[in-house]
Length: 64
Image (cartoon, rainbow, N blue to C red; front, side, top):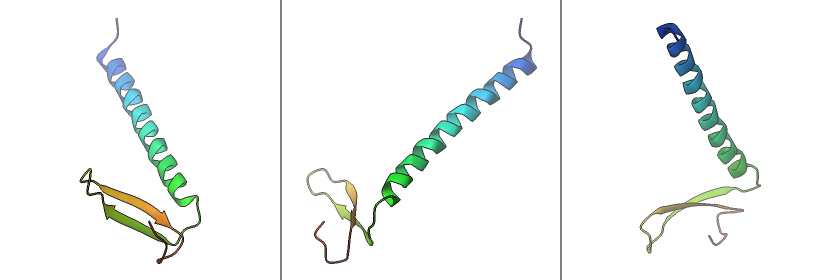
């Protein structure tokens, strides 16, 4: 039979693993974003979906 302290320890381990996984996923997203050479990050409103879209561009005059 597990004690209450063992249950708390198991819950803390589980939460830590989920948090580490979320941090790793976020880190991969940022690494992919900043991996390329670009000078401008453009945020546009998509008229068909109504959502904001972020794109990278090599310069301010580049079509996005």
